[in-house]
Picture (cartoon, rainbow, N blue to C red):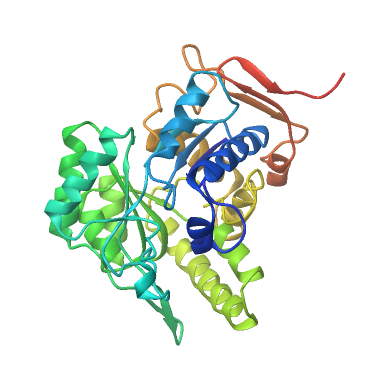
Length: 346
């Protein structure tokens, strides 16, 4: 399986406080455990969408996995995500005199974006993750989320990534930010709670993936800091489910991504169930995961299919996912690159 939206450097609990209270070495150790848990759950390839304040530490994790020093999925990594001053991932609500660092790297305007991207690529990033919208508000069933970068700024970022044969992915929940990102030509719009007709048309025509991440929203709804916070998250999830059906009807390509990290690693096969709940067939969900996930990770000529010349990434479950998608939550056998990492005891 492929998860196109993960956070190895996050775990359940207060996200902002992890950055403040836990050292980068501690978080890196925990990231290696998370990578192992994801692999043992059957996820043999993943796209890490930002270390959330741990800089380029994901480079070391990816490279250690590639050298066979630790178990984990093959990874595409983004380093630290990119955000504007006062944006979605800034450290808001703390004593300003303490100068608490944000969970993303500041870049204000196209010139700073390009400079930050060049540094990220220098440190080993495979792609760039940009926060394009946030924070989200929901009033009378209508979602609003301010954009962070203009279409021209995102276009400059996409152009810079393309110079190196790489791409940009964005966190975007709503228009106009999602539309700016689609017109700029990003590879994926992650979350995509509410997309307008023009945005969906551009995504369909340019084959830009939406990565819905239902599981994290479900988790936040069930684990809100207050009952009111949980209810707010549930209302956004309900809206997202309705809007996702519109995205499917509009022909927007979908890739599976769970946003695992704030909920326990190794449990993200739940995303398949929610994709079915909100309108996909079992076959379509599997194609979104394996075929589209491989394309999004730029490994479509190596993984996602069992065919001669492809890497031997194989899992086995006791049931048929086409009949019962929950079979994917109980993986009995994991092979990655021809190496067996998990098998049933004889």
